Length: 515
Image 1: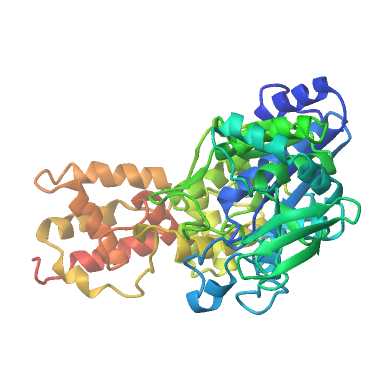
Image 2 (image 1 turned 30 degrees about the horizontal axis):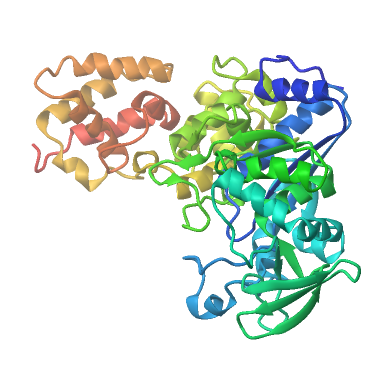
């Protein structure tokens, strides 16, 4: 058993203590409908559950943790990432009964579930997987279907009282799966036989008949959720804030589970959304997503875990995959960081993290300067103050750095050092060339990045008629052939002061348009 380092200061520990005081079994449940790419916004639910599960285990409490894939839900519309001609006719069919978009999976739902389940393994989330189609087809949900059908009027009254809406006369808590058209959204219940476990239906497609309760349809969401609580014995569940609104599905579920199924609702943990910078809340249906497996190629799994676990569930997380993502990695990598939340780090362990003690942003610069040659990277790191770095850990981080550069890096972080003086250097003006000449004189191999950074600013003071920005541009134009680049002091250290001094002398000797 692990002793939490900050007992009761972390939200997961506070919730764990409340759950323990309530007594009884501890079953944490999460879930989502795999109707599209399962993204890092969805990840908040399962990671919130995992943090509580781990906090309970740290206290020696026997607990279970499950994830329900709602793959028996219908395809509700043709999403932007689907071909209308192919998927338009399939709207209304269960996700588990629709062909895979790429043809390599057994169903539409598995197409999106497979990469998500792999990501869970990478994140070291040890969770029991439940697929809702199997929950129904196996007959495990059948007793609750019977109870719901027999309590149709009571459920309708609960929904009216809690939501203010009156259900229609032909409403039923069960949606039959029409065997003729394959849709689970168009048939109406016309009767049922509790003894034979069958439901009679009439579908908009013209089909009529009977279907077995086991696999012949599913309960509507507001009834399915409390029935699932009973069937799985759920006592703790995180869920999106939309379910926690007055009249929302958690509030109606509280009454349905008590008055219809004779159970108790789980401890509720509503959570806020994860917003993608510049694009708003993540949404699979709108195509505004970053898939978890896509991000896990860019940063270690601990970084994603930490991003979610350090924030209280009721706080919005703003996700920026640019430079702030690198800063996130540095926060868990640097044990001396004042911003580092030690308990969140403990709850974020995924088993493979090896701290390197090198700022990720610096490593990105070094990697490009060395053309991603690992031996050269190690040489530059030693020269720039990181001698003795763990080569294996650095190698692992280099793979992340390459993909971050390709996918998310701002333009001034991407560069290639020119092998020869760029032609654009001929356009430097007299002050810029004079500045480079002075800089070349003063540079030495013993200087640190901070020494060089200070030197640049000190020399800039000698050219009062020229803005510092123009002088910095002269540095980048002579090295990279473009006007912007990484922080000058550390960048010159990475490339080597001697190399840069020689390049600056060459640039200072040029005559051209700017002369």
